Image (tube, rainbow, N blue to C red; front, side, top):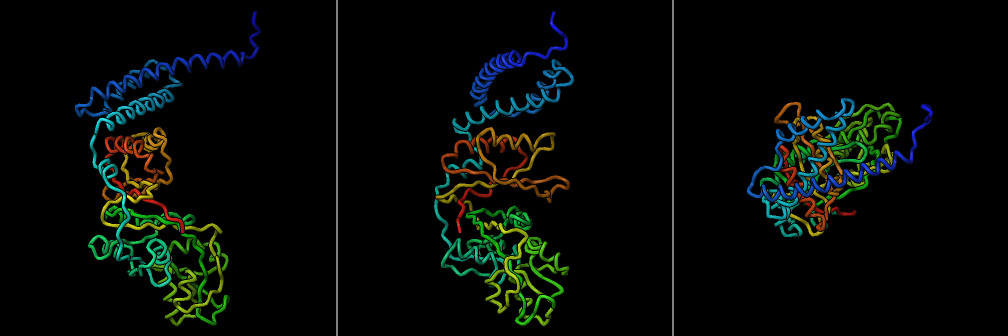
Length: 386
């Protein structure tokens, strides 16, 4: 008789799991084959995703599962059904399924934007101006005081493109810019990540012990918070780092310093009292160039979009899994409150996509466009190395 205290044979258990997995794969292949057949049957335009039917199938299936494993079984079944739907969407795309985002991506011929007028927010020496000079060399950008005015000029045809900061590696997203992309119906044409090295700028003759307050854009203040806190200084927000430098240069105060770029120091005739005062040595800001119309650049490598998710349990996890199912690499996800619906959120996503990845991207976006309450394409564009 076997000793009840004897441990189970691990090798035997592993062999049993292998046998179960083999059977599961056989059933999986069979289910995916049926999904192909269903796609052919639904070619008349019937919906792929019928949540009521899926919920009913899951409910009946869970009746056969041990209570302690029902939550796991539900997750398993939802994943299986999502994968089955992805098969149908891919088949329907190959059969010529039509949707707005698909037409934009599939039918827009790659071309470089024709740029004559560039607008940035800020004063001389602003980081946005430096980014614009790198993105569109040889074009002297116009300047404005706010991000909103820059976007208004593009929307109204008074500028071809606006160069705006979108996110920083230390302080996070520039929220106003995301809001304006949606409000003004603008598209991203180019992207550039610029190393940011903040300097402490003062009027000539001012010393460190004289400073009581520092002014800059809120993002720059956050990026240099350790340095500011160590000095015990008060802070004052400015619309732009270069505006802060102008304020120090033209004002009479000798206890006020600005955080801005070396270019702003030169433009305003200020001294650099302390250099590279960022919280981290690897401080970078990603800038985008936005225009009125959708275009695809020949070096396209990133797709940006906005999603509104259904208000259901696991909606975010399931949506993100759609990208993994297709082998697409998500490089960014950012949530922002939906101003049109209190306590709901919009999700801004970027994923890597070169031209060879387009078929997978189209099937994925087709699935999302059919299953999400809202999907908006922001751009398919290239990253510029400074």
